[in-house]
Length: 145
Length: 133
Image (cartoon, rainbow over all chains, first blue to last red):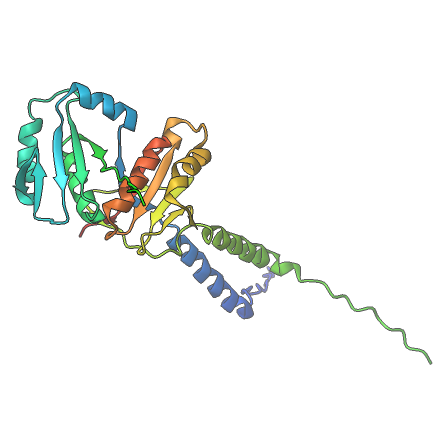
């Protein structure tokens, strides 16, 4: 006759007291994870100031002037509707192969908002051209007292 | 008759050590985050086809009030190029990323000078934007 050995298995459970702690730690952990999401953006290659000046003397670059008005920009002195700008720029860049020739000089009035500027410069970059900023220098002239 | 007093052991329960370590870790992570510019008020401009960028050594921000900040601390426009150059030091080309965060309504008078300063310091400029829906 065989005797069956009966073994009692104990049920091991985590202490219920710690549930609150565990929940709190999980909340904090996911909160920290969510707040460390990487930023999204666009890289922009700008030639350094000295290089730009040299290029300008060699080539006739495309000039784009921006004002506060979002609907119209000035391309090589001609007013162009913003909607027509991609096609006009594409036409101007068509014959230009080398990166030195595919430079667009962006001149902005001091009151041009950033979102308008970034939309225009992004468009230029998407067409395969590089941008150069030409700033209006401010000079204070003191007239004799 | 004298009763012997038994010395009571008052230890921190070793079971809680993992919890304590974890909480300390989170505390320092949050503290490190508080040194960045997440407390500043600005709204990014929108664009399409954006890339993800991990945090960088240098972050320049122009807030709602057109105030300039370098790594979360307010700075004057005249000192920006020098300070960015000092932080970047002699870092190699791929490691010279400068994150530029500009409030969408900031005007050219402010952001163009900043872009020029970053370019002067030899930084690789990245505009931080929001994906256009």
